[in-house]
Structures are given as structure tokens and as C-alpha cells.
Image (tube, rainbow, N blue to C red; front, side, top):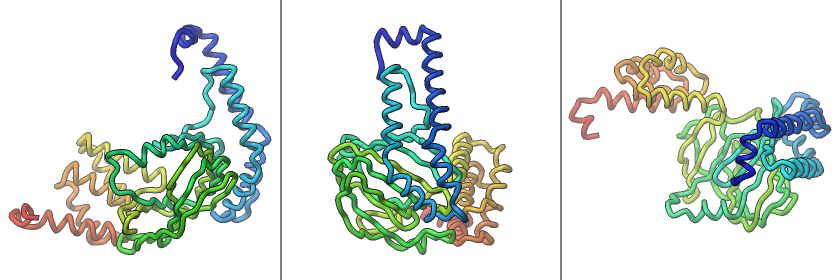
Length: 327
């Protein structure tokens, strides 16, 4: 964090702030119009009849050259050295173990560069309240370039492929397929519809390039228990579906009965897990108003999971009061 007299001077100096803003905008323009960006555009736009595999092949070819990464890092470092208040003009991607920047977007793929540190990883793995661990399959093809592997060791996992017809009953189990060290410069292609990895050890900082391929995604990301391989749960892998789930949960927390007509329209959403999520939130707002829709879902929903879940809830609601309390 930047503190002290210089920060106060910068905050009071509007021309200096404008100069920082201009430098950020200029860097973004230079990157967007630069040779690397154009090269990426040409490579992905040239793919005939794109598939996830073809896009992954193109990303592997681009990741084989680390020169553009060095140029990007050097350019950012130079701007930060000249102006400590400069901010990279890229969307940040941050988790509890990773800090990254989204440096390129295309309809077929997005590319990020980021760092995972040994300190962050150790803190996560040794947290006192850490419960059972899970293995996540994000439902998306990905290409990973470990520019600096940081002495990492990964375990690798496989599960039945997540398809458009995914059901919890047919999720099967995941299994560990091996474990090995990751080398500097190594490129991994992971089909997140059926493959995953877990960082078992990290001795230093890990600098990663990641290409997230946006076509042919599975409808859900799936989690399995790492101890016994059993299915734990699933969630939306699509941004739009995630936003719908987030907004409807917020409406339920606000007890917003006026939103029920709009939520009813979402019960015809193409993703089964979105339909069930919306149904649950409608029940949380007004059981009586949601009941006809719950009955329709239990009888006619095209996917077995929401049909089954709606039937269970409906049976509980229609049970005699004594049996309902006992349940």
C-alpha cells in the first residue's frame, strides 16, 4: 500500500492525477493496437470451424513464445517505476491464492497472466478451519503455461465427462490419475469437462499464463470429494447463469415479492440448474405464490434433477402437518 506525504501530494495535485490517467490510457491503447494483440487476433480469427481443441492448439502455439510476456511485464514495470500510482489497464482476476490480469479477450478465448505465491498457498492449505477438500472440474477447456513453476507439484484427476445432459445421479466418481512436478516453461492442456489438477506443493512464486476457451463449455462446473471421489455439487459455469442466480438470491434476501412475475419467466431458462435455483428463491419469497410453478416443475420439467427436487419439496409441503414436522 502506498502511504505517506507523496500520496497526499498526489491526491491534491489534479494535473499529476491526470498525467497518471493519461499514462494508463496510453498503455492500454498501445497494447490493444500492438503487434502481440494483432498476432493473437489473427491466430484465433483464422481458425476455420472452431472447436475447443482447435482453439487450444492455437493457444499452445502462442504460449510457446514467451517474448510477448517479457515485453508486457517490462512495459508495466517501467510505467510503475516512473509513476507509482500507475495501474495496469487490465481487469484484475483475484482469488485467495492467485492474483492475475486479463490481458486479452476474443469471442473464442480469454488470456490472463498471473502469480500464485507459496505464502498464499501455504496459508490456504494450513488454515485451522479448513474442512474437507474437493476437486473442481470447471467445465471449460484451458491451456496453462507455467512460465515459472515455483517448484510446484500437481496431482491430476479425471471424472466422467460433464455434458449438456448432466445429472447428479449420473455424475459418477472422480479418481486421481497421478502426481508429478511441474517444470518451468511447461504447457498443460486441461479439458475441464473431465480433467482437473490440484496444487499439492508450491515452493516459490508461480507465474502462469492461462487461456480460458469460451466455446463448447459444459453447462456446469462440478465438484467431487477428494477423499472418496463422490459427487459433492455443481454450479453455473456460464457468467449469465451465475448472474441470474446471484440476482434472484438477492431478491429473495430482500423479500421482493414484486419480482415474482419476472422470476417466473426464468423458470423456462435453458439451464436446468438455473430453473431450480430460481424455483428455490421463489419459494423463499412466497411459498403460496410459487406452489403452482413448483407443481408444474415436478410434473413437466425436461430435466430429471429439478423434476426430482421439486417432487421432494412438493411432497413435504403437501404432507400432513405432523409428518412434515417429524421430517
